[in-house]
Image (cartoon, rainbow, N blue to C red; front, side, top):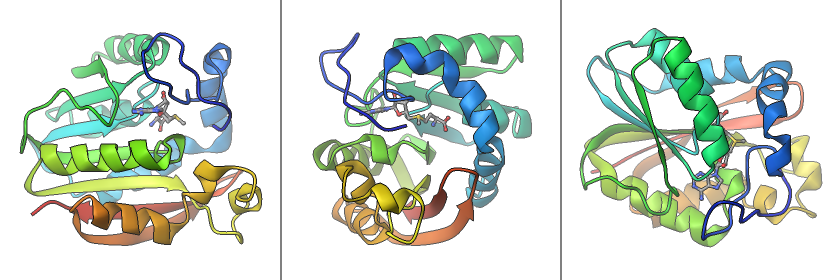
Length: 217
Ligand SMILES: C[S@@+](CC[C@H](N)C(=O)[O-])C[C@H]1O[C@@H](n2cnc3c(N)ncnc32)[C@H](O)[C@@H]1O
């Protein structure tokens, strides 16, 4: 999940799911081994989902979170965006196989193809640490713009604190250093989101993770 930004297929650099495009086929097996499905479930448990809501996942990758969401809430109106066309192809294929009505579009989180005040919930899983500080600020500004008043953002991301296993790499990897909870909370507040808070912690095989929530007013 870390590495050098890759410009393949887009005008803007981005860090793909496994750090390199050619590693994408390993993403789903890696996620299964790492216990990501349980963490996705824990994120959805916290997201106050209600029937009929419009839900957006930024950085949806191969679509595993929205597939779990679609199984739990078949009536949800769900859209996943990601800049990686290969990941989106996999996401669409899996949704079709599971007969789930989930839409996927190629986009950057910092430039959402959505009108203002149009989304009830924004979800983000293991994605914020793929963004540098500028793109993270743009992305959270876009989240603020598309959330309707009272809408909520729910995030899970790597815990960048030095006591976490991922934190041991913090001095080497600026993006993981940017995942210090205090820096994430500051970025949420800078974007104009309110009531931002750490909403729990979890552990999986490879690292520790933090849940965050925030609201739009
Ligand atoms: C580790 S994967 C997580 C995928 C998915 N959320 C999950 O939980 O399995 C991170 C994803 O963020 C995407 N990403 C990187 N930069 C992005 C950006 N600027 N905007 C939106 N997505 C981005 C990558 O292409 C990748 O699919």
